Length: 216
Length: 198
Image (cartoon, rainbow over all chains, first blue to last red; front, side, top):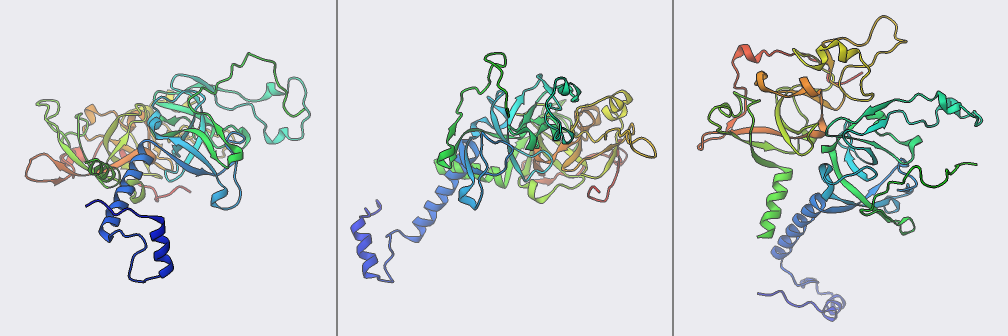
């Protein structure tokens, strides 16, 4: 038996009359339960295997994924594609979502810097505590310790965009690709921070263009 | 039809799933005749391990650290905080233990601290299982590529726990341990820790 067509005028008239015995939406309890079950199962399929939108917190990927303050709805929401789980079609420059290798209950989002076989710099020459008071001068960055390793088979090297405030592969080492849950396709909320990466590569040719000095 | 599929998928992801054991690295407990007759056991795997925790002696399925799309099944010998004395492998090779390794690589070997008082902090032949990791080994030590080769495995990679074996069509037997007593005492020794790191 096809479900009865629900008209807005009927709903309003039911509300106005306020009959306690008549349901607002004329759907049986069993049908409602089955529909809820179907919705939940489809939701599980989509969220695990296709894609999902979820909140993020933290400054480690600023300014690409900004940090939201305040309650739940002012968090930054990102759209992630689950078609890229376990490292399918992931390339250098993609932002991935993965389970933390040491604390399996937490999930993180960082950018892939190296895939298996690539050479990556382990201690990126960033600012250290003793550099805070230093004036810029020639030859200073020559003292920064630098080491290069090759990313092992089946792993990747991740780093946040905000290197000073990012706990990434410099802390927990190469990340097994099997932990990758998805790829971030873009920032969807708040609308002012809309940023769609999609599938285009985010690599920039290092030699092209003039060098930009940051911070004056 | 579609919703039966979704329902089955949900149950497979959350509660329970059935899979076959292809290699002979867990003989004689699982697939004891895989290398001779090719007959493979099916195991019933319980999901949700991340929340229930893993104990020493459990047979678990986990994603291979070096091959991201393949699943492996082995037995957990040690959990976080335990010290393992392996009988072969990377931890027994002084060249590997004392060389500079991948920093932050959780291989359990520790890093040499030049400023430490009272001796060296790295020992050849002992691995401390780091936080959030487990040490897995196959029952068939002759043919097993396990933690002795790739080190402790992150708990996040662990996918499920094998609870029943389906070999004869009329019953589901618990996984247990198919080895004899002498073999069971094992080749890698585990020093049980206090269950957490200091």
